[in-house]
Amino acid sequence: MRSDPTADRPTFVTHLECSATGTRYPPDRVYGLSESGAPLLVRYDLDAVAQTVSPETFDTRPPDLWRYRELLPVRRTEHITSLGETVTPLVELGGIARRLGVATVTMKDEGRLPTGSFKARGMALAVSMARELGLRRLAMPSNGNAGAALAAYATRAGLESYVFVPEDTPEVNVREIAYAGAKVFRVDGLIDECGRIVAEGTERMGWFDVSTLREPYRIEGKKTMGLELAHQLGWDLPDVIFYPTGGGTGLIGMWKAFTELETLGWTTGRKPRMVAVQAAGCAPIVRAWETGVEHAERWEDAHTVAAGIRVPAAIGDFLILGALRASGGFAVAVTDEEILEAGRELATTEGLPTSPEGAATYAGYRRALAEGLVSSDERVVLFNCGNGLKYPLPPAGRRIDRDRPDWDLIDGT
Image (cartoon, rainbow, N blue to C red):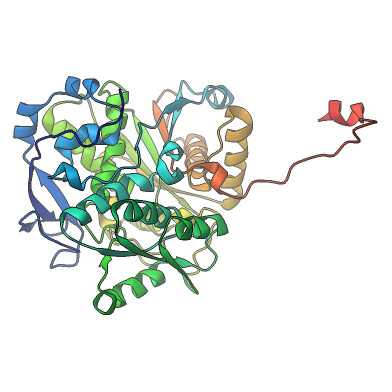
């Protein structure tokens, strides 16, 4: 079946809700944060959804994220902005499982999406809703992949986009953002400092801030990771999910998806334990988890090779921590050395090039196994959030003479 995101579907949004206070807001209006400064969450008439579709309904639709339209906020099909968001595969890591002595471990490879990362999900929804609400100019801070996704989807929709990135953002990401049509600027600071520039420029530049969780709809796009995973597994959810966590939109979105599916009665058993994986050089959520607080303090001198999770302060910190606690999950930090080694092992054992952030989930899983936080018989899903070919690769290319090849050298490799 070919993708057809323009098929007419009923929509069931009832209101938006402040994630901190529960205050309700009417739908179909432009919102940033709630009046209390917290992220807004989209709510649906789930009873009406259950009367309209069933899990089997989605089997008859093309395999893309738009098959779940009844659980998404876009009202009018002409506003949908798509670049062909396919279902991402679940890759069984058989060699890794044997090496670790576990029953099974699977990776959901989000690097197959447009722009090569899971950020396509959030931006597909954010840009579609921007069109629906009449916005024309969008801006955001980014560590790379989110900016590339915004640039691509905004260009697709005929909207202007502005992206501000830390000056040490990987060159390929910066060029990708510019190539896709955004106005991109390097900033001598971290992503939260880039975000401050976006906030300061809102009135003067007339742009709308689509930063992580500062608008309600990126989380709905990321929610489709949970809907899609449940669908792929026959609505039987895994025991544990390891997720690379910076701003945490994906973890929050998946937990929202699992809660909605449970309310609909489409999934059985308990929801997965959610595990937030961070880098040791930037681990505010891990520190907050370990100390038992609701909000995480800003992480000073943040540094890691996994730029996508280098987020010193997350506005949705209490939502991330809430999902970890409600699910019986936990947070774990891994070193850059562990991340790089995990990436090499995934590539050489499974032939799977992952982003550093995706490799971090495998490093986190290994650490959790060693510490007894997960058992060898639990069904585990790791999330790779980006295509590894977008990142610097190790040097390669031994040379031989074309007329006198050194067979000992060749055999010795």
